[in-house]
Length: 119
Image 1 (cartoon, rainbow, N blue to C red):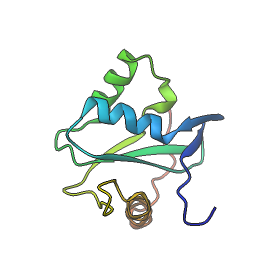
Image 2 (image 1 turned 135 degrees about the vertical axis):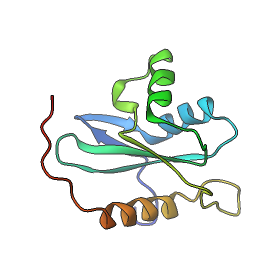
Image 3 (image 1 turned 120 degrees about the vertical axis):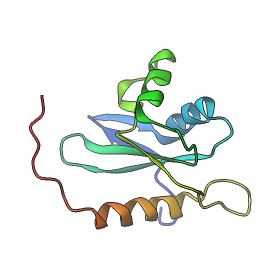
Image 4 (image 1 turned 30 degrees about the horizontal axis):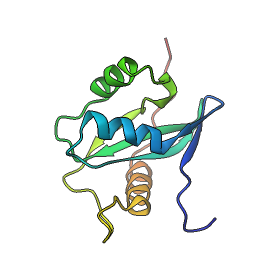
């Protein structure tokens, strides 16, 4: 399976299709490419990060849209990142491996947050 992107995430014990989350983003922001990456999360197993070119994209906009479409709360990304330009393949599709690498590098550069109280 090396070289092929994993297109599912296990969030809170549920399998979430990354393509389904990307389809919601494409419906909400049809003129802006987006990609979803699953990263390890100590509490939920994995969490989703949505990367888009949409300048005014916010997690709350995505959340409201997903809820209106009756999508599972687990499909709502933990974070929404805005990039000037997403890496694209020659086919015109988003380069998922480059996006995953970008997310991993950015997370590795960020210091780990101290344990936060949840409430």
